[in-house]
Every structure is written in C-alpha cells, then in structure tokens.
Image (spheres, rainbow, N blue to C red):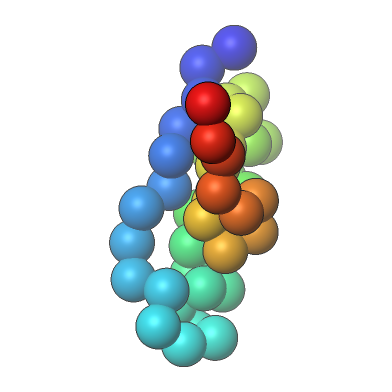
Length: 44
C-alpha cells in the first residue's frame, strides 16, 4: 500500500482541519496517510 505524507501548514485549527480533510479523501481512495499532527514523528 502506498503511504502519503500530508505536508502543509499546521499553524492553527483551521489549517489542521483542512489537512485532516485532505487525508480523509486520500484514505477513502485507498491510500495510507501520515499527518504529523495526528500521527506524531517516526524515528528509524
């Protein structure tokens, strides 16, 4: 499964909600998403 990193402005609640909406559309289309404000950081 492809994973999409959703990058964009996250400075206020409206911007975070917009990124959540974009991620939701991508997830409905079958993509896995990563949102920094929702999923935190990943360290390898």
